[in-house]
Length: 373
Image (tube, rainbow, N blue to C red):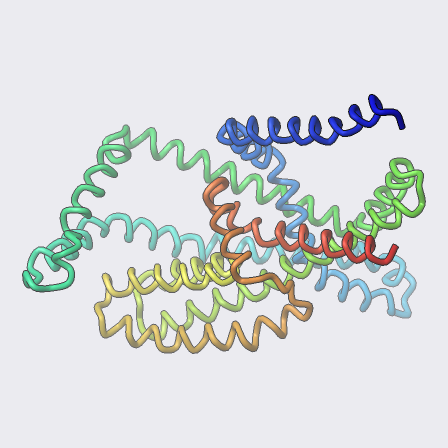
């Protein structure tokens, strides 16, 4: 290579790095627009995302029922094992939704309305407690009473003073929209389970078209297989463990006659999807609401069995359910959850951990493949 050619070759990586830095800068400079666009896109395809999520969760019972009917000596059942399994899952879902809508949902709605209506009274009790606290108390140095008054005043000015009917209408529309998306998700999940072989065959054919090189195609298929494994492990295992948390926490709270037991149990089940931080957040929320509604003695009685259950769940129940651990550093999980929550709210906190697990698994596969070459 002559001197001029060498000089040109030396500037190529510098130009590439400069272009990448400009792209990163423009991305960070417009991060709010990007996150808004991503959030809207996720909202549009959310029925499909719900469908995939439900399909992962229902896959294990669906597959077991299918295997049971495929072994039947009657040709009618063995040839239609997958269809029959899908119909059984559909019937069970209809029964579950009927139970939730007719029994569970009214209890939850009553709890939410009652809790919202009781907030001013609870706030007044908290303010009286801090106002009457001794001057040498540790609370006096934090000026908590004034902070709560300012925060509640800001909240009232921003939300409560808006047109009440407009708020109710917007809330009803949003809830109706999410319920409709969930219903579509359930329907899509059934089609995914029923047609999963055709779906996998389609993606295999697509990979043949997109990746002519067989070695590249094998690597891509391997990465996709790892992604599928991570998603199935996280969604199916965490879903089952969250149901166990919901039922157990609700039962404990009902035993001690804690108000809003069903609502608090639902919170525990949902936040269980967030590793490490989820259980802690749920425990704090349950403790705060319990100490306000039932007093210090009640929260102490409730916390002991809840802490015992959390330890059993973390060290025995969840590891048994999640046979292949995702093996992610707790620090990385916490960072992922915080970043996901900061940009995409609760959904970002839920999706952060499986996304990090997928990226980690793909990188591990890529590095191990590169080292073997």
